[in-house]
Length: 232
Image (tube, rainbow, N blue to C red; front, top):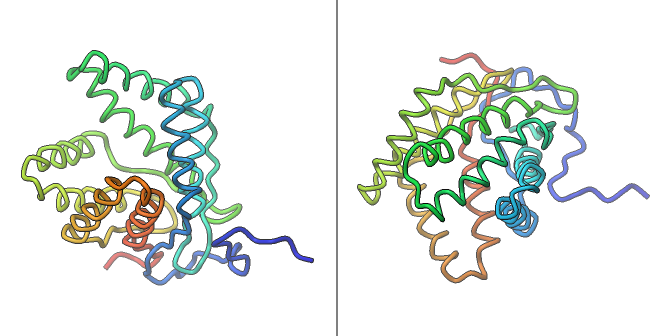
């Protein structure tokens, strides 16, 4: 008998070409407990520092490989813990700096802005479009990235404005992913706002956390439009 397929597997399109891909949303097949379990492992890895490259890489691998193009073709993530192990270790160490020393200076800037930018580039550069397909890359420059992050941070003080700032930041990120497929973010600020509010309520009750986290992740992924058609 044929081997049982994992949830979300689409074997009929595992080698589907991406040429002439009509515009459509990405599809996420994340499941509540696999996603939550990997998030907990990443958190524990940061606490114990040394395992952080392995636990963090495992989390990003799951997110990447649980995503499908509109035609069902999968992404393949080939990132390894040793690629940027020092970034993950620094992130873990800087958590202690922020919590224990309440640092709000250079180290906080490094941990909250610079290192996530390096992780973003690494994630895109290790993501392959289909088995044996071409890799993606991230073409965004650091200073525009810094400006968008600053805008999102400042907008937090408006209570609700951060959702619209996040909308435009995510669209900037998507449009700067280079490769055979073009991406854009179609989610709206209001949709981000109320969904995050629902998830916050779910987190407050603890038990719904795995389902709330998977629900929000699937929605964010579904708001990313992918196509190979030329820009209008």
